[in-house]
Structure formats: C-alpha cells, structure tokens
Image 1 (tube, rainbow, N blue to C red):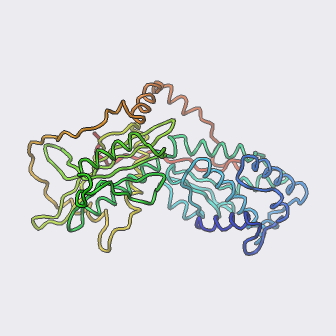
Image 2 (tube, rainbow, N blue to C red):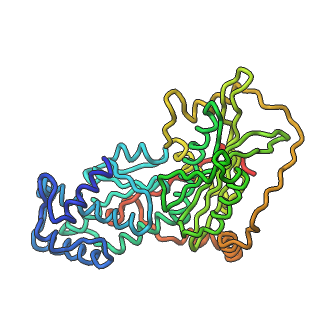
Image 3 (cartoon, helix red, strand yellow):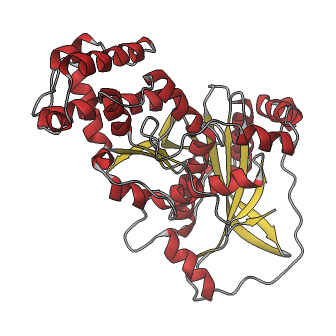
Length: 406
C-alpha cells in the first residue's frame, strides 16, 4: 500500500471525477463537498447518516469495487485531515506491512478493516479508519462524530511532543548521514550545511572559503545564529558541520549535528557523530554517537532516537558504502592515543539573547513537577484497541538507547 494511491483517490474526487471502478453513492459524495475545511467534517457526518438511513448498506454491498472505493476515499480523507492539522508523517499500509513498519512488540487485529492501515512511524501508532466507517454505516453500532475522531487521533500524534520535534530529529539523522558521506569521501571535506522545514529537501551549504566566502568557523557561527534567531520562521532547522569531540581524553573527528524546533514548545538537540578517517592502512569507520545537549527528557529522547536512526538509514550512499558497514568497521579500528585537548574559543551570541534561547528558558521555567506531569499524562483519554469507534494501536514503550549520553 502506498501514499500515491491515497493521493490519486483524493485528487480524483477534488477534480469532480472518479477512480477506476467509480464510487458508490457518487452523487452524495460530490454534494458533501469534502474540501478539507473544518465544516467538511460535519458534512461527512451528514453523508454517513444519510447513507446509513436511506441506502441501508450491507457488508456485501460495500465489498464491491465501488463500495471499496467509497470506503477507501473516506478513510484517506479523514487521515489527510489529520496530516494537514498536525503535520505528521503518515504512511498507508496493509496489516502485514504496517506491522513491519511499527515497533517489534506492536499488535494489530485481523479482519477486512485492516486492508487500510495508517501508520505514524514517529509515534509508532496506527489507525484503521475503515473500522470507524463500518461502525457509522452499520444499523446497530457505536457512533462517533468525525470531529471527535480527528481530535482523538491528533492527541495521539502529539502526546509525546509536537510533530516538529520528530521531524527535526529525523532530519538530524539525514544531516548526519549526508555529512558523514562527505567525511568518508577521498578528500574528506565536510562543509557547514543547513536544512530547514521551508526547504526540507535542500541541503544548503553555508559558505566556502575556497571561493572567497567565509571561513568554516565563520560559517558555523553564522549558521548557529541563524538557528537561534530563526529569521524565516521555520518550524525546525538542522545544521551539520565538522568538529572535534573530546571523549575519554581523546580528540576525535566528528560530524556535529544541531537540531531545533520552534513554536510554543521549542526543542533543541546536539549530537556528535565521531569517526575515524581512513589512514595507516585502516579504512574509514564510524564510532558510537554522543548526545551533547538536549532539551528533551530522557524518555522523550529515547523515542526521538528511533526518528534519528530512521533518518540515518534514509540516505542512499554511493555504491558499496553505507552507514552500518562503516559502523561495523569501527570494531576493528584502534582508537587514537589519549592526549590533552584545548577547546578553541568560537565567538557566539549568548543563548539568552536569542528567540530560541528565551523560548527554551521560558519553557523550562513553566515546566510542572514530574509527579504532576505523570498525572497529566495518565489522564489523557484513550480508547482500547478493540473499540471499533476509535481503532488505533498505541505506541510501544521506549527502548533502551545504545547512545552514549552526556
């Protein structure tokens, strides 16, 4: 199952057309004007009531090409409303591929409603909206308004933090892989680079002294100020650059990655990805990452770890190279000898004087005691996975991270 199919269904409906096989209740569908506005949710409720009371559909009638297209279109619509509201990265699957995409201990029920499963891989949660639709169309069944269902799903998406945190973490992984590819190249040139939610597919180099631009130190400083000030109002930004990690009295080359998310609940993360350049007959190797800074608590970072790892694995390396192979190569590489290290002084803007620094300070000051936080989390309403009116699978518990934390 792919997101392209969902897009094709939604585009065909928006254009006033149909997909191959057509829609059941095509006239009523078009009259409902499902246009992704908040008011369209009440029109969707009205459509389902009219179909249930006037057409009185049967399972056999819905299990036809037109009936399956009708149900799929409405399922795609509800999840697209969720995606537009939260910005979550949601993938469409069938039951088997959904289980493969979710954490190992996840479980999903069986049945015809599982032919369309929407998975938020960041949160490790799945929804099967066909179960909700079947309940609304059944003559006897639990009723739940579309708006209430959307609100419940949105709470699940953001219960561990804003979506921007997970996007920033995922892109931090991508940045680390992108910069590490440069480090592994024969010339080993790692340039300060920036990613932004405004241009998520564009790795923007921050400058090169080879062409009369700023030095790398100046480029890193300018990039850091840009992340702190966020002049374009991005939802998140990620910067990568070459640095030195002082670890156990050793000086290690490292790709440094800084990620930040903005808004009402700001977030900051800095990770060092140390590596050993190819030299003295030894090949390139990637060492264990080191967490240098984060505004997230331990449990949240454990969840963010999965997003970072997926970002690392999402970048395609040149033929014959990949992150995991270089990570395994570190097992046979000797570490450089321990030696004193003096951290160079790099001018920077005081964090408290920047918008992000001030927002993070305010967020820390407003943090409630841990006990109150736990109580509030426990009070978030949830519905058992077996309940047909709100079909979903909860996220698995965070796993122990293999990362070294400072």
